[in-house]
Length: 327
Length: 277
Image (cartoon, rainbow over all chains, first blue to last red; front, side, top):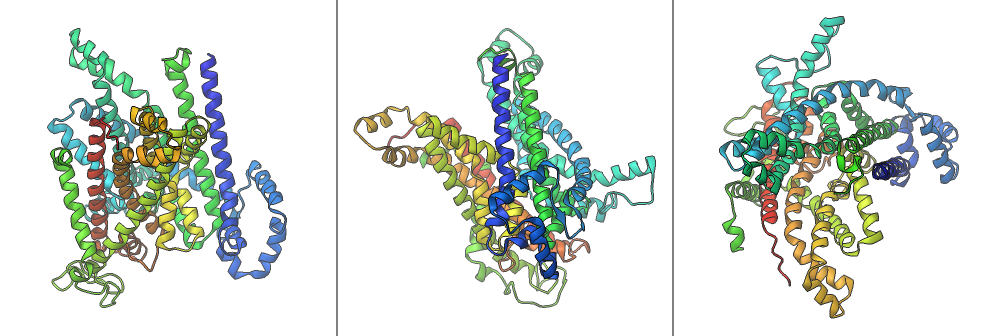
């Protein structure tokens, strides 16, 4: 048991430090950049449009106070859940993000799950039949997907399936004017293309890890033993190889979550899906820095949380950590 | 080299072919491109004999933009990859060689950088700096080094126990001398594979940042072409000749690097022999 506690304490410390660094980066970046830091803190719109308002805000935000004091009040605000104020939306940053985040998760969660399943199955198959025609075919296909810019594949899928074949809507979350089940069905219909694109990328990511993991384990002694004692190939694959290859995937899928978030941001923009991606896209154009900072903090916190959960799960699943027996 | 030639599989060959194609395109851009990529003309022309890939919203020839874009995209890819691999190599070398507390700190830092979502952080950094390809190179380079650091470190951990390193130490060689003269040359193979893969990653990241409107408007990369095609109505109006070609170019160039990089990595795994210099 002590091993598990030690492992968890160590991981928690790591995540706490990561979070602290992320929070500090967001504090430091606008203050280190060339030019007037007030632009960076308030956003370009308000800075150029109303100079007299800026003077008032400087005092209100305490930007004329020493940097250590500013840092403390920044941390204090964050602890209270205050991410600042977006002048572009005339709303607190947190309110804007909370609404948009929900829609990003609607895309992200099915894609992460489907991508993991798809990638694991294909990766296991390719690794098991390494060197065969099947392996070459699947691996080439995933290499190609891996090389495509996410948003460009999204544009391509819109061109083919929405523009030419007219099977799916061009963009948006829902056609509007619907309620209940009809609305749900409409949202699902709008989700189909973006989720498919993201699933392909998630699958490509998991595919290579699963494939090399299966290839590596297939070469181990216990697999040879299993074969030597006359087990059927199917039993060797499912009972010996896959059981060992699955465990590290818990962590991999969590790391993949961060990669998928970035992909989702870009894919959303193409589909005008009203989530974090379109929010950040608009914030970049408006140079709405408070919103950009807030978005980064929230996304980073979600990615950290996903990884932390995976580590907890890993500690529960892995008998070497659970039982305190060192391998 | 002979060993390498014998192990060339068809994916690596295909990668080299793609890569040389784009290199030639970039090197001979003024000879290949029929027009000046900045010269305006009749807008939105579909592909025809005079404009093989049509024209964009201000009538610039898309084929010429593509040819010159190869220069910018490859430049950003190579430089950003160089920066990231240089940082990763230094961190990996010292953390593997010194071990102990230095290793703990450096690898702890690597783990932290690995977990921070890179694209959102790059967006913030790029949004605060003025849009220029140099800033993009630095931003990508500063966040892409983690996997190089890990691979180099594990290689160095193997190498530092080898007899030739001990011999050098026994002869009184200093740490810096051993690291750069004996250990670094033996990690080059691993570094090369990472460098090639990092070029692919950097090109994709540049395309993403450009697409988000954070690219350099004075330098027309393939990512900038896609960004304009999207933000200026090419996508909504279905002018496919505007946004398909740059995407195909990015994909094929990245595929070329990925094929070579994966090929090299497989070669490295098979080969365990160390060549003491």
